[in-house]
Amino acid sequence: MESIVQDYRNLIENLPSKIQKSAFKPKAFIKMLGMPSATFYNRLKLRNFTIDETEKLVKILMMENNLEKSLANGLEDVKAGRVKDGKEVLSKL
Image (tube, rainbow, N blue to C red; front, side):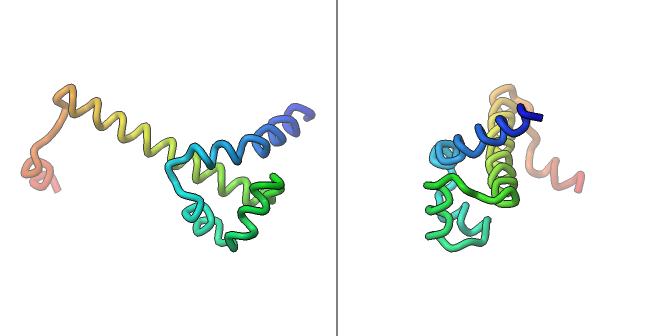
């Protein structure tokens, strides 16, 4: 049980750097969290997001990571020639 608390503490401590490294701008996080910007920056500084807010932040960061992976996979498909013509795709729809 102690490891769970330590993992959570590490997550909270690392959130500011993860948010800073994110391709999303702080305004996007603020909008997705639905909180005033002053509250966001204060909680970021003090590292005191609620559990619900932390959960939302993690989901946003995971969404970004999944999107980056999907784009990278798509680029690999293009490079490997695994593409379909637009007409072919439309005909299957």
